[in-house]
Length: 124
Image (cartoon, rainbow, N blue to C red):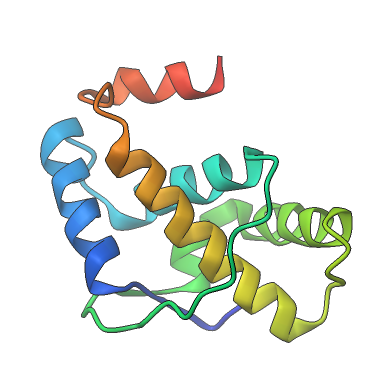
């Protein structure tokens, strides 16, 4: 487990609300999974910044990852090792938050994401 609970910033919450409205995707965790994977696919390392946990959107790691929670941990560890950051619990927790929030910003900034089907275009 990377973190016990995933808590989003208010900015990320607002971005996800807009995405939920535009795409019809109802669940925070589904959008967060897409965001996390989108950020992992980006070649650059996320800029280290303090990400506040100032919203009321919180989910457990189990809810975030669902039945693929171990896969998300493995992907994060692989990415951190590839970025020469190591895989200590603190590094993993920090990088998870950075990737999650960067991915949410990417999704929110993509004006072509109007329907669930548009997410498929992200992986093709």
